[in-house]
Length: 129
Picture 1 (tube, rainbow, N blue to C red):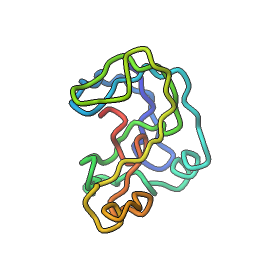
Picture 2: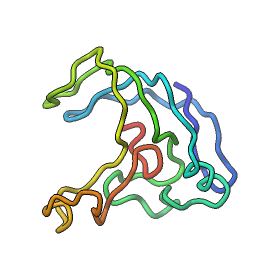
Picture 3: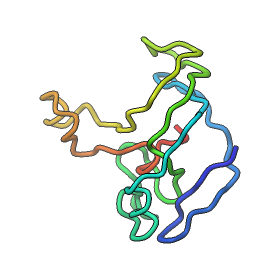
């Protein structure tokens, strides 16, 4: 499949990447719309900012540049991994792209938005995951 991949400042390439495999606890989404926002522009012009630099993998995704961009997207669920509840194949979805550790004091207190390891699909990796 084709993907816009951030390699470094002012270096985004459209590349062929393998279609991701479905894992437990995840869903596969056929993307219908993916926006480009100010964060993407800043990443392109000044990055890496949120994209983990080569040699500095994100603590949750384990990924580093190059990463597949695109954190504002919607589409249709095309497959559902084991353990996923509340979503079914064919559901239309809009993605809230953060991922958190569920282990730090902020996550344990219910303040996931303050997670010490927070990352974003399409910036911190995870777009293929």
